[in-house]
Length: 473
Image 1: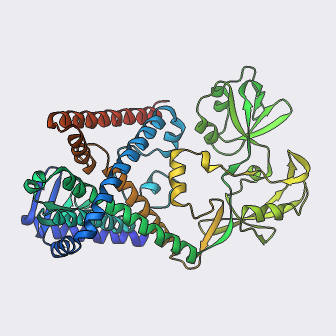
Image 2 (image 1 turned 90 degrees about the vertical axis):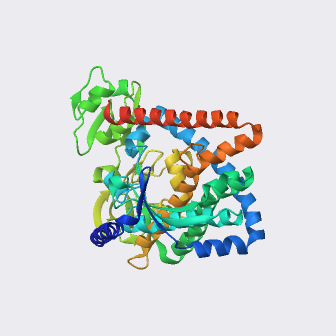
């Protein structure tokens, strides 16, 4: 983090001085200050004119992929709207506003533990890779379709100068609009096509790097075991008797920190205030932790040893625990932030078979999780989510996280850019598709406007429900 902040400072100073010295070459265009250059134009012209047959084939693939990405993004956008309206617990967990640029340190700022850290170093490298390949693809296919590339360059947002960067390729728009529909659609979809190819290549590099550098070193559990309990059955909280229990009365009796004891007659459960708050207000039932050794000891969720024996998988940990009996005293070693911690734990009785030992840790079924967990699961499909992997050299995790973010952002940019909304390539792509089907410009413009305003309306709905779930109880 220290090195990263130093690099951020150097970058800010360098770009500030550069922009000041080159201020006469900056041009204001809408929200951006543009710095135009001729960098890369020779390469763009060479590729665009040299590989005509290959680019012809890739052009059709690019259009087909554009439609697939547009359909996928419309579906995902619909799921996101549904999630913000009907799944408030996920919104409270994620916390990030739905309209939010990808900033350095975003996961750290919002404490998104399910995401790896996002450093400035990652940000500047990924912005360069994603933007340059995206824009160069536009330029190459434009030259292939005999549309002149006038300039290349970088864009800076004046309100956040000089941190936010963008790359661009300036095309001859007059010549572009005179082209037939298919050539225009090829040029428009080529940027996202390049992002998908970059994402696939990055994923292969990520997989190879992970296989060579990381080795199983422990077991990760997701939660402590818990049970569903009817609120009306609760008789006391922290030894305070309840006559007419309700969600709010139970919550009010829980301590802000630490483990709380909740009883239902002869049965004892445990709870934390944060765990209960995540569930939301319920009139009928709540989930409570079982009275188990793991939560009593407050084990951290990465176990590397049981009685000094390495447990490199969930199965190995189970085999090791089965060597003992209920009431046995064992040591459990966990690791967090490279620091090991040893706990003394007395094993309990397994609720399903009292002759077997019981630790009380749980593992989530991610196949039935939310959209967020499914997306993250897709980009880590080569990893077992319940195994703790350790790199063979110190910088291994830093490089892995960089590659992981590169893959995620490549596919994210490809998807978002194909939204049928005016500000994205997908907006004009959608307009041309409608124009090609209807052959009527007036109809295409009306459908295009309708889709743009519909998505803006849905985005406003998302923002409203985010604000309600975050600030209104």
